[in-house]
Length: 509
Image (cartoon, rainbow, N blue to C red):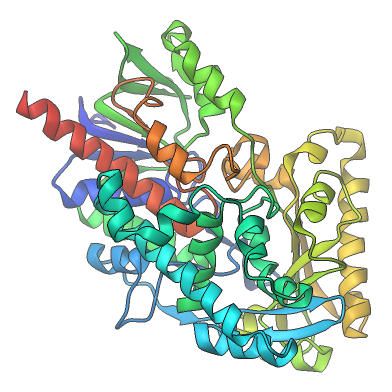
């Protein structure tokens, strides 16, 4: 019996969230789909691992675009529509900001958030609420326009706030509100999840982030991020998708400018009408296209012109006491010595000491995630890839442990507790860990940076011109939406929609 069919409608390279989202959407339309995944499990970075008999979340801090059961947002609705039954838990807060002169816990809900900022910085309620409402209006426009594009005159008529702010940076728009610096500091912590300083971050991106997280709150799966990927894979197979693990794709086959299949590392040549690829275009266009002469010059120019966003360094600990006994009192803590996001972005180019940390105690979102009497606590920085590319193999262990100790010492001093005295299990994840496990280009988990020169609005306008090889689509964090697990799902769906649209167009000819 042959391992593979003679032909598929679509081959999906990569069984992480984007690839599985694409497979689900295609299978829902009756397409014959093959997913090839290099690991023995689905999910990519959306996974967990076991140490000392305890399952530990590997990456997810919080999931955006889910929404409550009676008010689903686009990612949550997609899971529901596809029959992927994830047990979502709502995170109890937005974040605790530990910043110079500020120790403030803020919660979702536009009015509540504005009141809590006002309590810390009196006299700011009206301005903060007006800003958050503006973010929400832009967020609604982005969601509608992603489904129903319209002419520029109609956009101005129906989406005035979106059009008027689209060409401005976050800093430029925030400056118009004339808020005190401490209020601006309290509005800034989520910047790290999009990875550009405010002077270079499009206000559109900031709006989507704030409206989603602050307007609707964030969620985590009860059984860790791997619950998402396992249930997505299970549902996809039930819908007829063939998923094969331990199958690394080495080449994407191209003839006459059109992709027609792949070749795996073990030598299988598999044919399909379309290929959706989760690998970064950097890798695809430099080493995966066969023949190499089929790569247009414009493709290489595009990847050379794009700036990689952030990678990740995390210390994940299982501690031998409940969180409150270690003075850990919040699910999410953003801690820094400044909220000058441009200065913090510059700092992330090096190897530390890092000036801005994000910490998660999963027990406050999921009380049963560790055995009774223990807690899970992680400390994460999201560096740029620049510095970590310079680490030599012989220096790797020393650098890794130096950075980890800096993070642990910082939070130990903050809590007044030596966390190292309470460690049951400790795992260090570095950019090299990410690169090795996921194959992400230089360990970059957030795709290409959203900047004033290159962000979602510009990318939507150039998307057609950047489809350099026919019947080849890209999914993953590096695709149009960028940034995180929720957008990865959106990117997978977008790739599937492109395939379905092209199929319909070609059938109509």
